[in-house]
Amino acid sequence: MSTATLTTGRPARKRRSARPRALNASASLGLGVGLLWFSLLVLIPLSAVVVEASGGGWGTYTSALTNSQTVNALQLTVGVAVLTTLINMVMGTVIAWVLVRDKFWGKRVLDLVIDIPFAMPTIVAGLVLLALYGSQGPIGVEFENTRKAVFLAIAFVTLPFIVRTVQPVLEEMETDVEDAAASLGATRFTILRRVVLPTLVPAIFAGAALSFARGISEYGSLVLLSGNLPNRTEVTSYRMASLLEGGNRPAAAALATIMLLVALLAIIVLDVTQRRLARRG
Image (cartoon, rainbow, N blue to C red; front, side):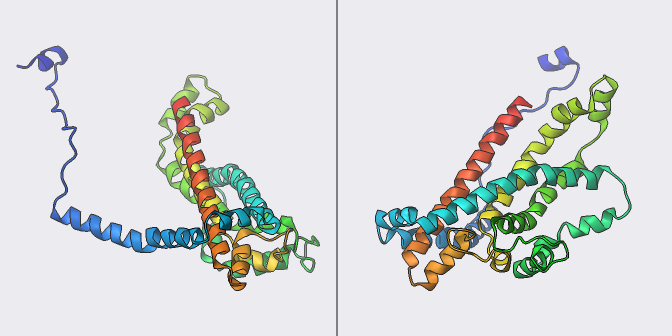
């Protein structure tokens, strides 16, 4: 009988080899097909945009970042996307919690309605928002052609991302740990902070990354609602379309590259923040 068996009373488990297994023929084929498809859809188009922008040298980027209309569009787009992402992180988590943990009349209807921004064409979403929040709408507010319209449209199309990433995690969570913490005298706030949120943090931040990326790229719902007024309500997507229509493809590609870097930076910041929060647990 081995030493491990004598000391623990249980048979020793075999240690798994630390070496990763070599890919077999079918796995190699699958990896190659996957990388080829990913390259055709993502890597090659992204490389083409960067090459197009770099054709004019650093002057292309300098002119893009010194143009007041482009800078204003960048500031508006990124600022509103950050704001809506922060709000969605809270409200999306609350909605997901209600859909999973609470029972009420019309719950299934609400669960279906959450997906409407996913399924609805963005131009239709803009028309719906204009009919409700425009000067001719029943509410009596005049949001069209203002920055409020930009916020409203981006918030509308990005809310489901947080809900749909947090909801499955909540559904898989067992309530035994929460019940045990409550039986030991923990308050609801303590349970939420020490038990629930550490489990939800990765899903919340994953949804936040999707929400931000969707927000900075929104176009269709803003065409009718915001008016895309230069230096006021114009967003980067519409600015790029204007540059392309004017025949200035290098400037449009440079702006697209800048937005790619902004999205990458946001993903890195969210990932680092999520990891630090997970360590503090």
